[in-house]
Length: 238
Image (cartoon, rainbow, N blue to C red; front, side, top):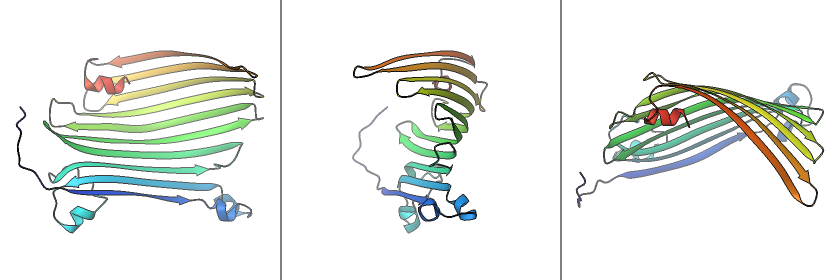
């Protein structure tokens, strides 16, 4: 039931964004020994937040790191944190990246509050062999949490993912890529379980002065336990 009203609630908005980048290679790229090892490291941290609340205190109005989603004074919020740690990022032979992401949000709707919390940690590696072959491997672990005050749409999904990719490059004429991905999702607040496998093949043939010929095929095998017409199933079978 929706009823129009001329009564308004006074709120305070707070937005913040910032980043921190560390690249020792700018200073120590040509050094030797331990400094040369440190020059292979790099780190980038990014944080963004946006809050709307009814707090009248200085801390509540101007604190960009206020993350208590259970506070009833918090009308809406959105924050994201991302950190990328890399080793050998500029190397053409091999490198490793560790990427962490965390996103939180809370929204007031006509039916009550709805909150999300998503986090993931990805470890990605790459190796080039004789400039013709490239191997990529990724492992990702994370969770997806939803808390809603209506229709019992709450869930907590933990997931693990493992993927590998092999690419063959013949000059600039032919490129062949094969890939495989395994992903498992488990709802900790229910019985839903999802296991998916995907195998793919892509061939890219370049015709000089005419364009590209691309052929791509994927094979999927998915096992799901639980009801399929729910919001949890939609999230797990995306």
